[in-house]
Length: 283
Image (tube, rainbow, N blue to C red; front, top):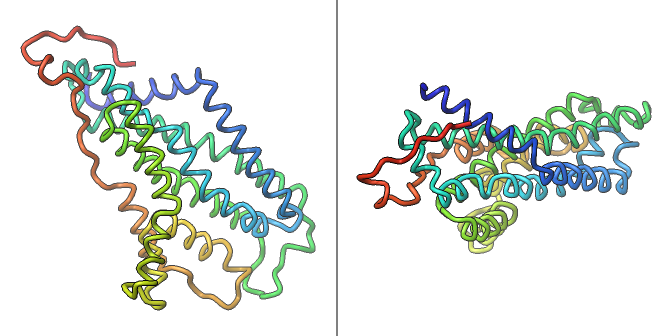
């Protein structure tokens, strides 16, 4: 078995396990109820795609990391605590391959849980929005499905970044109990911690009003929010040309997503030395 085969088998195992788990179906239903409920309550679908994004943006900004943490907080902690990584030492599969296959499988699950409800909301908007609401008075653009597709793509990227951070915390935790604690703390930091830190720095004079956009752009939530404003909601805000430095926000998201993760430790390093670990199929 090559390393590529091992990564694929780990990925396939994650996807197969997700298909048999009703928890993910419940997460998708909760996501759908949340975004549809907020959008309908705000009247966005009858106004068009941009009004709908305005209605659901705050909820999505909190909901997507929460779903990512629910999907991934046990992804590495459980295998470490069960001793699966001791078994993996007998296969030609490096640690990065196991983590990568696990991440890819959980990323597929997250994309479905988040993407399907948001895509369904976009279809709902297409069937309910009136034609008279598509052109904004600012004449900066036309409300179109392409703007909503940008929002959907940015949201999925935000979810994948969140999931990457979750796997990092799961590796650090090493057990289910610690993983839950770290997940809750990480969720709090990801959703509000960055903004709180930036505004605390603003209050202390470290960050000025001129550098506020750049400071917000380096946090995951701030970068996501700023890119949504710049790439989607700009047609409704004629007085602003940029909310955050676009390249900085994009680079920050890529850095948060691609930062190196620590190699997962063996669950029983001392016991695994000098003995033969029984082989077991990966997949």
